[in-house]
Image (cartoon, helix red, strand yellow):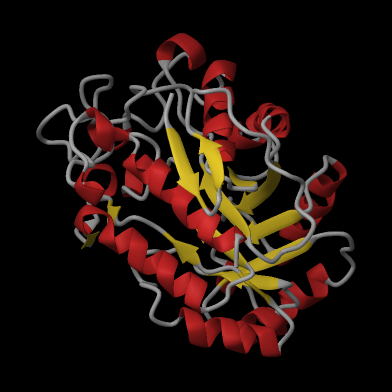
Length: 324
């Protein structure tokens, strides 16, 4: 059993049964994490899904610069999702933001499973509306209304700036009982689009240096500021994108968290729990040697102690956020 002293309380970390996360009563001090339910295996799903992107051949070769400690898993396996939700709750995170690719998508089909296991772990569920084919502001608003009937109150709209502000404002105006966040660093655009808040998601482009200015402007416009923090970025294996943001043994993650706290963000969004393609994940990674990177050296940890280093550090920062 592994314990971490955090902001005057003790959090039980992954696999130990977990502590119950108290219900969220205010947006102040909220931590939310982006979650991807798109992974598949032949045994569970009939074929490899996403792990085999860009010509990779799991389980030996996966579409990531890192190798998951759990091995390549299925997002439709109840035991996997249950373990993920407990792990997220054990870090003190309150909300899991589920990637969703439109009505009828694989992610839509798995939303109920994720929601059920999240609720059992004491987590709220939000939806990350991805740019599915033919997504328009009107289609997004219709999806929000439908998902709200399924119990979802918070929505993050990725790539929202591809739609016109006036179209978003008209589509979102009739909605009630929900918070909708625009994917932008420009509070003026979020306000013009009729959104309730904004988030950045991209931890390569947004390093935290603009968070204080962004959140100050958002507060003046009565918007919820939810900047995104992450450990790094490396998508070379999955997409061929040559841009890399090094983890720097954990200092990249620490710097982004410090920037979010200094900005007095009401919500801190974490990119990501398990987006292995882009190397933004904090889920435990196993050191299996080249060509895979590992978390060795993060905060001075090595070997098995380093595998869940980012889970431990996230619990620390969430504690700081919630104790402000």
